[in-house]
Length: 327
Ligand code: ACO
Image (tube, rainbow, N blue to C red; front, side, top):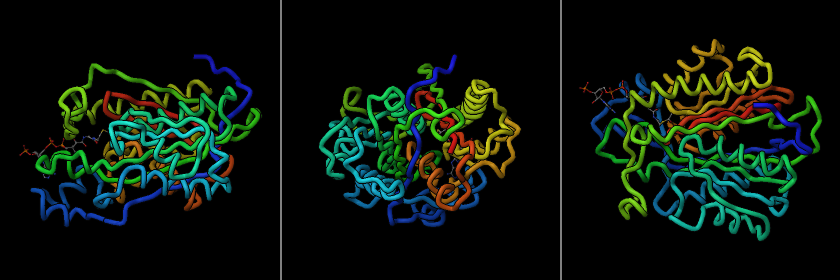
């Protein structure tokens, strides 16, 4: 694929995140599920997860993360003319959670819609917003990954319920005239292979059953595809720029599982110290995980101006993708 220079480049000018107050440790979980702290830590690297309170919705988490991102960018909400929310756990079947976010932020212009690509959702949403900004159709976007994923867990299925958590992360993207070598999103690559639907899905839905349903997963198969697909998409996007993994300053991966993170970094020959890891504290927050990890590394000062930052994710579908940014 040839990279085409466009009049504008979308630059991440602010980021933010939000975690529900309720923290659930593995020990607490082991009181209601047949599991142990040792098993969860050894198989996933997860120590704790946050859980939304009753009545606390995905849009509430998204709005809190968005406000923080706007503050960080020093921008007022009414400068935003595009809102893309990546979520698998929308407030309602319709309208889009993005529209509720828009209303809560007091924005009455521009476009707002959701993107559904499960754990790849943020990367899909970022690529979508990037393409609108590159061509000048929108000027300033809020891209949010937000989930109340614990609402779709089967608490009788110990193979899945220990792995996920709730949260939200957001970035503000602003269109700036393209400047070769300057900061901004350089490119993105998205993939899907629907033949693998049954490896990771929810056994409900408005059309299929009329119910919300619960997460079903073939963990070992998902693991195998994750490492292969993530290493492949990272190589693909870097090749497009004539770059190697060693050129990266930071890899900000989807936080599914410590073992997937380690195996992918090893396959790429990437030093573990260049991988931002938050899965231990947040568990797998699906579409929220990449922006939560990004916000963590920006706020603690690891990600600095000029750094080359690669975000990647894989999720149900299967879907996977990557976005490369010069900070
Ligand atoms: N606590 C204790 N024992 C458990 C638990 C638990 N929570 N869950 C499963 N077990 C038991 C099983 O019953 C089984 O017992 P048995 O041998 O007596 O039958 C044993 O542990 C091994 O089970 P497996 O499912 O084979 O365990 P595995 O080593 O594959 O680990 C895991 C499971 C952690 C899910 C792993 O397959 C994995 O990480 N897969 C990736 C899945 C993932 O990250 N999905 C996230 C969504 S997709 C994404 O975001 C990329």
